[in-house]
Image (cartoon, rainbow, N blue to C red; front, side):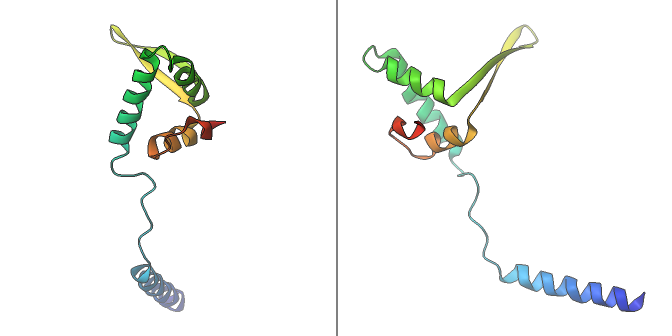
Length: 102
């Protein structure tokens, strides 16, 4: 039992040293992702209001969202969108050309 505890403590020390020397991985989501997403949605909203861009903006929405569900929330309805999260994140990250969704 002592040998096993000693081996486990040695392994723990080895792993702690290994982790201490590792570089921190980049964040999975950008810290300002919510702000970027808000800006993209605002731009998309403006596109939906413009007669000339409405069809293209609507097509982008259709490609991002697979399902819209309205859920009762007190006296209001909450909107739950389900769709292609990867495409939504790519769209929010920095893509300016909606052709990347094709």
